[in-house]
Length: 73
Image (cartoon, rainbow, N blue to C red; front, side, top):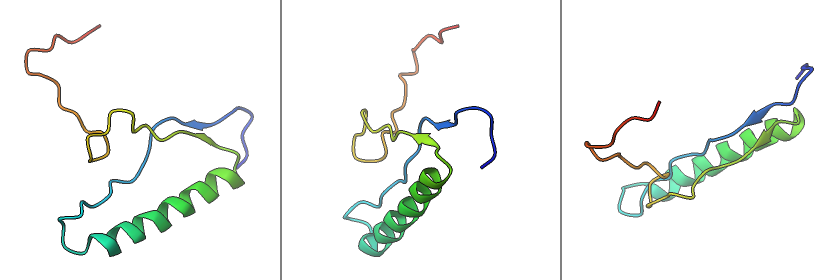
């Protein structure tokens, strides 16, 4: 990659199939391979990265906000 500045992918990650989903082993193996390919590109092109799962509840950290949450500006 030709760039004059640092590149960082700050939040990414595959969503893995749950054990109760049909075909989850094959699905997750495919996603692990894809993640490996993605990380190879980042390494080759010197792209910094992080996977954010700190809030994970078993499904890639998707968390809805309460309907009464006030937006911050």
